[in-house]
Image (tube, rainbow, N blue to C red; front, top):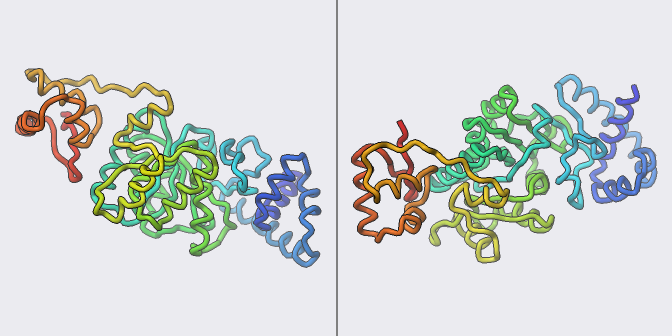
Length: 348
């Protein structure tokens, strides 16, 4: 009964939406009852929210949803530091991952092939080296990031803009199932159970995406997009923003290129991100026999898929010679070209 009353109080506080005040009062050592009293709500409002909170508690039990209040040791430390953290998180899946080492990866809902490949390339490298992925569970770059994390045996957190029980977007039904059943991540929300995907939910959700991590990476984004809102929150929260550059004539690259102009770190590989975590990247040691010195120079650089221009710069070859060597490796069946001028190995 004690835990039920305690969590019901925090559900009540979450329903008020007065996050900044709640954090301030909590940090001063106020109890939940004191905070409720201090908020000065009208009696009818208090009774209404009490009833909703009690119903929420019962529904969460029925759905197997874990409730993590701001006061809990399970509450993500970085999220607690932002100015307006949710008073309470609804969690579906393995809450242990909330303690993981993460980066936020966000982008457009209408990615190009270049954006999809860049996301896969970077995320696969991160999860290979123990970095988890936070994203917004939206269609597009978010979905690609979550899927690549699970595919690579990594872990991921999906931050929802709906109640924790709502499958949205519908196309991510199987992804939702994979995250929960694989026990390699969780879904979280601040919204009450049953809340539908209202337009104003998603900008509000974005402060949680950036708040969970020290770094937010934007892959593709137009100037006016949810990903740019997330980047804005990250900067307000004193966190770092990274961005993948793109074609200057692509609408999906206008936002990311603008971020880079304003000081965001330019990212072209997962290793660029790993440097910020002071992680020495794992090196692929497979090397086929009978390569010339020039062929081996390019092969060794391709420990992960990379942009052709990056490989050219690292190899030290002139462009005509570089193209000849790349063609040789293709003919030998050792590498392949991907859309977006990306090269990758064909191991095995």
